[in-house]
Image: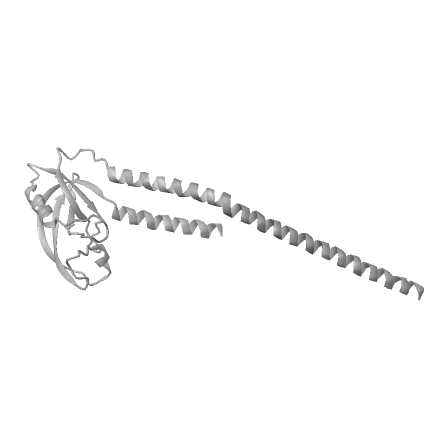
Length: 222
């Protein structure tokens, strides 16, 4: 059972970790090299990795999606999709897709005269199943070595820690006031019942012992 318990908690931690890693904002320092729009088919299970804006029907099997092409400081390409999230999940409340695309166009640069920017996004990039992180913000920075402090993530995890400590204290108080006394009462009841059973066994052994002794006296007379 110990291995089952560890397997359960490990799986739960992995699922929660992946969910948070996909949903929480991330920041990439990149150089914008292009933007484009492309028709995307949304008729398979990978639809979960695409936004579902309020102004688009959930029954659509394809739609036009805008993309931002970038180059990372190490020279590797990174492509972001640019979709509104609307009021849906994750709760970025993004409605400025057109404005973000315009900003990205304005920040294009070449390797000879680079303009470095920070793109805030959520999601993952996977070339095998063609999924892209969704850009939610863009701003210029001085260079590729700029330090980005993820304040939102810091406050988010601090809040989670606060909730965890709070719920633990509440649970300990609830256990001390309600669970432990109830368990103690159940234990006392079981102990009393066990004592009565033992007493009944002893009495029964005494009764049958007397009968056995009486029968032995009759056998001795014979």
